[in-house]
Image 1 (cartoon, helix red, strand yellow):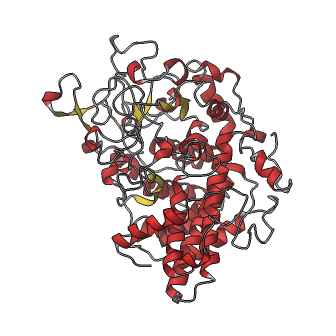
Image 2: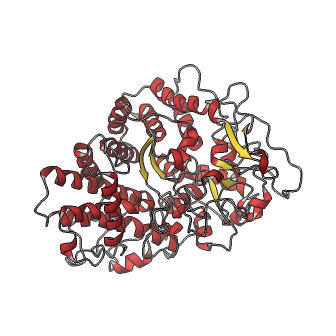
Image 3: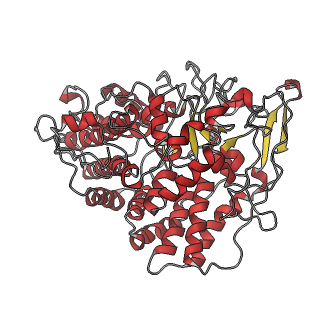
Length: 582
């Protein structure tokens, strides 16, 4: 498909019109449409854009709030993965607190909403495939392109569900309410079906989608298929795909900060992203509302709400050894990066003066450090409740003060609803997957693995990305000033790696530094088989800050996957079987 930007926007508007009715694994066709309205090329294109629109996870019928099913996986990937607390205060969204403490149940609204978003997305893809059969005017090229994109998205939605629940049904275009076959079992392995969809996408998607930058292409399909292989420990197969992506030179690392800035999104590091836009006539419906709560509390930045607060355990990972600029893989958690727990903003405080990886301060808002261009983070005054969420604020989901009204929705109750994309696959992710595949595959190279990790560490060592522009809130007439926020020392690993165990430890650690607070960590811990130990250490650390964690316990036989919503089991006449322990 090749459309102009204006036509793409027109189709997006049509998709919003045609796809306004959103459902879960009730598996009814999407929306109650007049079939003649979509049984043409333009209609199929609109349905496809409707399928893309659920990448952000927002808009399911079971979801009272958009953040319940957020495509960023901030709840299910980062809060459960030791990177962050729910934040705010324990009585605000108590179902979130139960997820954080590994005490959730099959009636949890957030779990149900995520299920709904993913299976609604899958059914939107199936609507494309079903409708195509009824259209007579499609060229062979149109048919191949529509099908390849729909199958890519269907695989994506099922893969996200597989990560969450493991035992899931695979819903293809032959499963409909009308056919009466929508009450499905989840006892059939879905990996082969996900792989099959993605292999078609890899074989038939173009290498570039031109100006239609939000659409999947050949390389994003390869990247997703490689990720699917990694989750199954098929390292040799993953390595082949990752080698091709890297050798294509289509993608490259940009400044770290540019991946979380609405004005520099869709850059050359973006392999696949959920697109966010504001002030586009959709009354905020296309902004990243799933992360709208994830801002500092009580200041002009958001007016609300203080959720998604980084943990001390996470922050401690960013310490470096002064002499080498390397992380202390074994002892990072013994001494904390200094925080301001128990202090008011009016109390004196000097930030941690030890050496740090600068990625910390593009990820975490902490007292005494510039918060983008909003001024110095004051600590207590921007924290909803220190005694539950800790002293830190999230940063990757926040826009700059200078972007308010341009990259935030002018009509929204919060500027947390903004135009920052959800980075679903970054090139940095590809490099770290490739490093892992080099270590774990039968014909891999530790030297190549080290090189991939060092590319990221060298990027972090770019001092031009250490300077913040901020305005002193006490002296706004002075304008913006440049400041190096902290004592940054980060260097690549020297020599050549020779030990596989050390290499994997370094790669796993680097993923936390590079991709922290981006919704990946819990799923990584589970697939590596180290979730129990990591989360145990995290809980021991964080219970000193968040007392409600005192009864939290990660039980791998149960908590490696989330409960299948009971309401969905009931709808299936109990053909869906619950995960162990729930």
